[in-house]
Image (tube, rainbow, N blue to C red; front, side, top):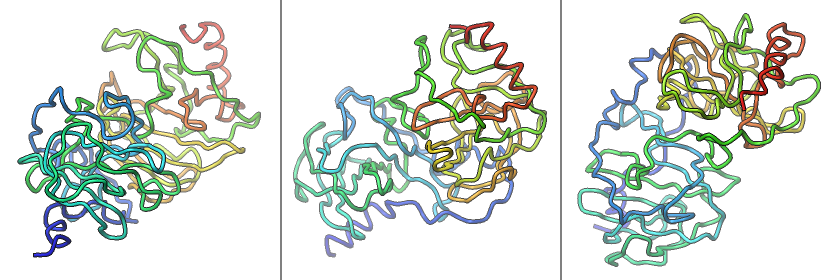
Length: 355
């Protein structure tokens, strides 16, 4: 058996299958990754010796695309995580093991490390190791190649893990757990104030994603109604009845749709540049999706249904905005003629964003 064939048998399909262009509504129960065969694999407990393969060995790292396995092995999905890093950066072994493949595969460099019942994969990488080499956690195994990235034209490392024949989340090996789709670096998850807001255009730029705009909890520091923690509320809560249609705030492409921990069912849309600023919106606590990852959507198109999945006290929409990669208050980017916007801004000024 050739080394190339052996590698194919070892790692299977490293990349996700091409996304479907169909957009049937998906019930919350059928979308939950907890019910996915790919997500049921028990992970070995994270070892103190395991490290992130790029960036600071102990983290944090910027996760561009999180783990989102398909409900069935033959369906589209994201069978690993993409970590932001510059081309030419050092790539390390996440844990101790034996190199079982190191070389080109499907037009890009791939390194596979066997850790026993677990295998980890790294691509696109120019290998600095050979098959049979014993490596330790944190040992350099190559450098990130400039071509073949999942994040092209940007660079990133696709890091995968398989337990037996099933894909599993590699971030669990370093205690990372579930992650958000976009890089976490600029987000405030503790009691610190939010980052400085970007300047929205005077004419808004986005449309309200709900039919009757009403902000029930604004962006800013607050006491979480369930956990009691004082931290950043990283979006605006908009009133929406259970099952109410949720619409895209602008034209764009769905970049992710799945279960996202406390956010419940969450869908994200990349809008490209609006008024000169790169914008991405996300829609959380949904009860169902009406669009799929990779699908282009029009402004105002129904992309999901309101719900109360995740850490939520009732049906509503948690609406988030990333402007030039930074989480920011979405309401100033929405039409200012709305009475909801006017009352929201007055409340925000009065309460000082609860800082």
